[in-house]
Length: 231
View 1 (cartoon, helix red, strand yellow):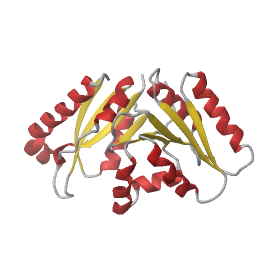
View 2 (cartoon, rainbow, N blue to C red; view 1 turned 180 degrees about the horizontal axis):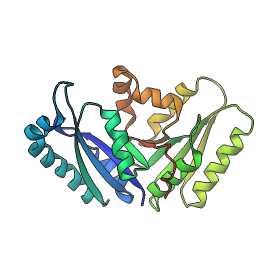
View 3 (cartoon, rainbow, N blue to C red; view 1 turned 45 degrees about the vertical axis):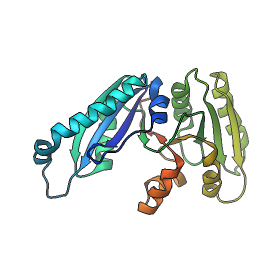
């Protein structure tokens, strides 16, 4: 079964958009409630101080996911390094993707960039599992002027259409790939991207200003580039 890790900064009152919960209703979910500690604070001390409140908040979030239809398990971690913890727990639970939270309503259209060195088969397989038989349309986006790029994009679209998913393509041949991708974002409710996708990763995981800008793109599901998780 496809599993998605959803990190939530649990003691900061972070909530998960209802649209993202509904979108993940076809997959298993691990809700990772985390709290980042100052370097000098031992995790055991923080757990003793905050665990009861954190567990209560985490169970509330997990219950909301269960109500949306997905099988959900909670995990609570006190950590000094958020990203290291996300990677470790994703490995432990066998998550094929992890979520970056963002505001959205009902998800009716997904944007799936295939530019760069991404594992296209893995991304398409995840999208097919995620959409299932629901009425969610997909736009496959590729910024590349390389020979055969258009044909590769159409082959990817055909694969999703054969799975019964309404799929359109957007092939950008000139201009800045990153700018073209950002221009495509507002017509979509959420993004599914490969972990190795270059420009969008920088956009999402860059400095604070970039992360604040990223908040306007809605939720992003990052398909991990880890072998052996393709179902």
